[in-house]
Length: 428
Image (cartoon, rainbow, N blue to C red; front, side, top):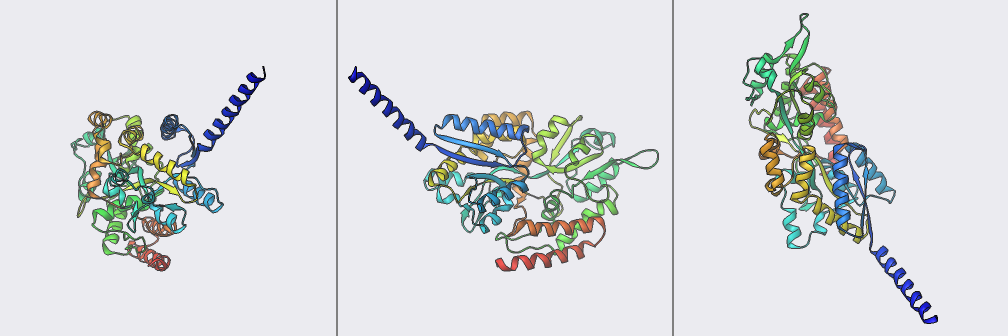
């Protein structure tokens, strides 16, 4: 009897020790993700996270849905200053300099030491890496990335006597086609505008489509100098303003970002510029046949990249950093990136993702999915500087002043450049 009790005691002790060892090996990660609770993006990211956790015993990942991009970076910085940062987060690519300046993130290069890891760092589209690297290091890994694209209502084109398969490819064609696409009621009120380029929410981003097409860059790669008052930037803003004031093909005043897809669905505009991240939304909700194309060019074709990168936070244990690194590698792998792109409309960030069976099938069934990827050939880095929210806020205010007519484009941009210089001179 005593021998049996001793054996049981030893077995129980061994079980406890094994349990303690397993617990000690467990790694807990907190992951901030920029969506509100619920919705397709949240459901997809949760499914991917659950799949990874199920396949990697001892790794626990708490996906925190942190609201907008702005909410997410604010929460991440607040948590970091309080000594309790997440281990990883998806945050706007343009916030890279802010995160570096706050010293809250580490470069992936510290963990990507093997040949395989280094090859992985080089596997993404170069256009996306422009907002992910600086000073010879990689701080962000592309995931929820996009470009703005042109959407058009093919039924409206046919009704206006235009070829429904041929969108405008130049600024001039945009104006010419838009004049034919406008509809008015018996009282002369516009019921359908030709084009809609949002100027709220992310005004600098869509406007950067115009500046890129006019062959001018808004900020240098080091994030410490802007070119807001360049004559080509002024010309681009004059064109945007003229769409409403001179050509009368776009609604006057500030055009709301959030209301733009709905306006398109309801026939209030025949064309719109918005993110490829809206692609699934348009596919699911447009009650008419629609097209997706490159943004119209001027001196060249062009668009900014946009969206969010993965970042790793400094105040984590070595085990947490390694576990977070492995998770980012997995979720950005071709197979997982394909699932994410198909579910959301964001651009799969590596060429290899587009070679998967799933993406090839998706692109064959829905060719518009290829447009944003093809536009990467002409894409440039999204406007990003040190103290980025202050600088882009100044620029957005300048755009609004010109659009609403309180200042001329030249006046507004000259003032914005002067204010940006005052902020950025400390970083040169």
